[in-house]
Length: 151
Ligand code: ZN
Image (cartoon, rainbow, N blue to C red; front, side):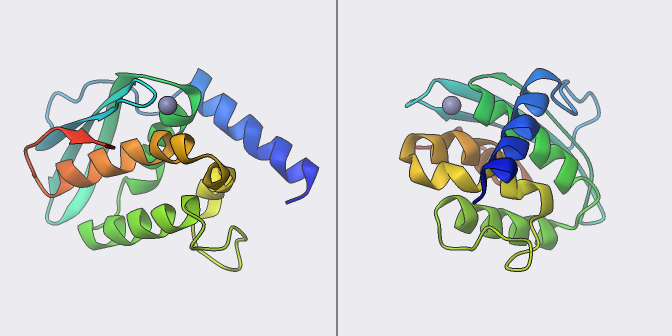
């Protein structure tokens, strides 16, 4: 990846860490889950409002590193309005991206802005930071009713 693109990616992550989107507790949630990444200490709570198989609203709260917070922020922006099935597909593609199984160019995947996390594949601990919000969202989506941990 060229330097300019890497810097742009860095800026997106810093921006979402500084001003996380959808960062609040949701009063009228239909489901929720809590996720924990013991390797880094990231804790996230994800709230969902699912109606007619569609994620009508999504929000999160928590504390953790810049990667985990930015990933949660971008996740909420992207999942909102999607069907459960669409959310599952994005989860899988995102997971493949950060573990290096999927190419990071927009002509190789449909992940758009999520490609900013492609670089974490070189850092196994960071993979867990970036994927925590997604595992937690998926647990809430499927009403698994257990605490998510990356271990
Ligand atoms: Zn972290």
